[in-house]
Image (tube, rainbow, N blue to C red; front, side, top):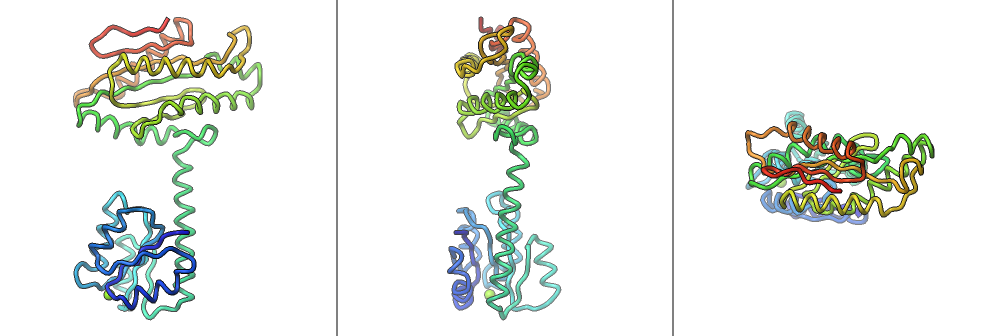
Length: 305
Ligand SMILES: [Mg+2]
């Protein structure tokens, strides 16, 4: 059941809204703006019904606050007021309200508008999620990688954390597709992504499909040696899926991995290290595939096999 937050200083109003909506939604009622903001941040709400006229902080100030806060920005807000004045309506909508309901309420109109906005909210959430997820594999897509990697990099600089960046791809994938067909190739991409993503489990790990049979991952913490060891485990886990390849290539489907670990400073350039990871991947291919090659700052290259 969707949760709705009602913020209105009048107990009579909140109770009235509650009686209209309680059969279809889980209603939380707050009678001050401060309490409303705190409750909204706790999360899980699909809609906020917000009174404009309140004694401490008014609804316009509160909606500005809600829209400026990461935790609450996405929640649609319907403004409620007895001030049936187009000026107020405009102001609410300009501040980011999705709709406006004037008192006195008609229960049927309240229900209809609430239903509409909750449906729109679900539709939008789903759309936003799909826009960031790779359809074939269910892992992050390149757009999400592009959006998040820069922020992770900046955080690592700010907190003085080590940062690892790695690229990998499926060995001789073109041969696989030519041998077994594209639908089978798609299943291999999905199987590899599933296995690899099961290793990148921390909230700070970002693993994405970069394109085709190429993947990319960024993660923080640990030194170059531990990152190298981690990726060797992943490389082995993919080999251990025992997906048969064209025998001219090898027994099983495998991946090659190139990566770099450093503790970045503000004078470092992300693109330089992305290029370095790509060069390590190229070396892994050149040296015979199914291996991890890692560059660790201040140390020589780490090579598997
Ligand atoms: Mg009021």
